[in-house]
Image (cartoon, rainbow, N blue to C red; front, side, top):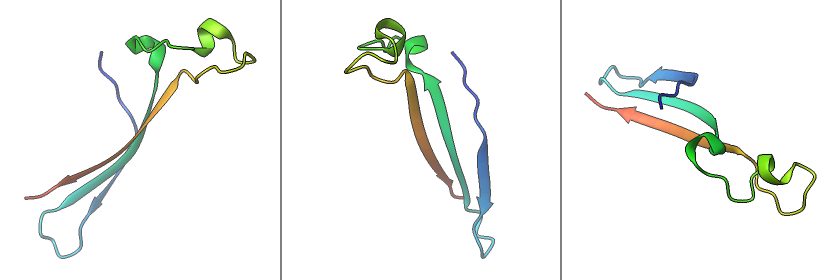
Length: 64
């Protein structure tokens, strides 16, 4: 399954060819088979539920 997300791109000072990309990807874990104590299965008001949202914070550094 393909995903897309917004990211900010920075070019390192000094023009050495380094590029830094920062972004946050939020997926619904149930779409990826992660369903243990899911909100969808237990309801948001139930005790001990785990959010269906999985947040991935990314920092990619590419060097020339």
